[in-house]
Length: 36
Image (cartoon, rainbow, N blue to C red; front, side):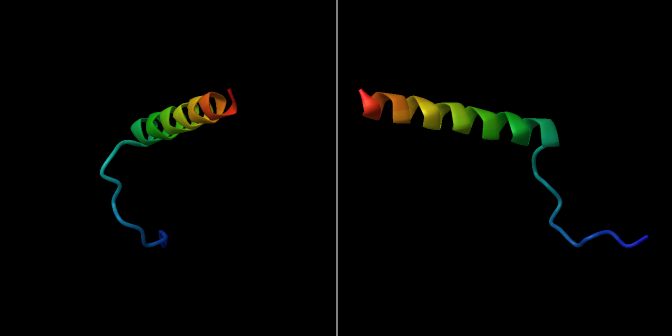
């Protein structure tokens, strides 16, 4: 079994996903404020 070579993640997957979701929500808020 050969696994793709990749750096060991510093954060758990669920925490990375939470950060991505938070960044996405923040981005949507910024777009909403700019659109006012």
